[in-house]
Amino acid sequence: KVLELIEQTDTEGGVITAVNAAALSTKLLQYANGAIYDEDRNVHEVHQIKLDAVEEIVENANGTPVLIAYAYKHDRDRMMAKLKKYKPVILDTDQHIKDWNAGKIQVLLMHPASGGHGLNLQEGGNIIVWFGLTWNLEFYQQLITRIYRQGQKAKQVFVHHLIVKGTREVDVVKSLDGKNTTQAGLMDSVKAMIKEYKEIFN
Image (cartoon, rainbow, N blue to C red; front, top):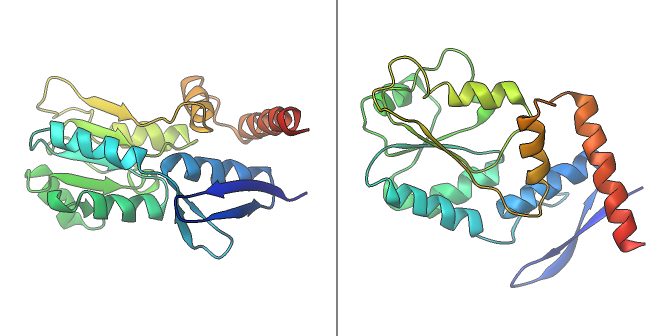
């Protein structure tokens, strides 16, 4: 059965389709982040709540470097535009790591899957922002330990989670908190969500 999400923006209305429960879960997470892909991979922005929030965190950091974890390419691209005045950098090379640790990068964007073992970023800053969370507990923990590790000069490491109340993200937080990151746990969560929606709309 094709599951449908109704997308509404300031300029247009439309229908975004998800072919199965897992795809629906992904679409709902995209929606919470503020933009969603359609079936042709076109990006439709639906809000800027998180963009405003991450800009506020960066501004309040007063020049202290901020590491931001993103989930989707449209998250990254929208943040690159929103935070342009801070000269954001997408982590891609060893030189970026050196520049971050030297304090030359104020905003560093990283995907959790690329922030795994072996990256030492603890010298560059002590602020992490999760713009979009991951279901994968290992990715989540590994990214945080790139900063929160031996050699961290600051007394504290601050980890911000940007969560939109009442969205699919709340389930991700619960899953990470309960260390329930198995495929079975994910699918149980999706099934419960579908059952809830059917009760609402039927």
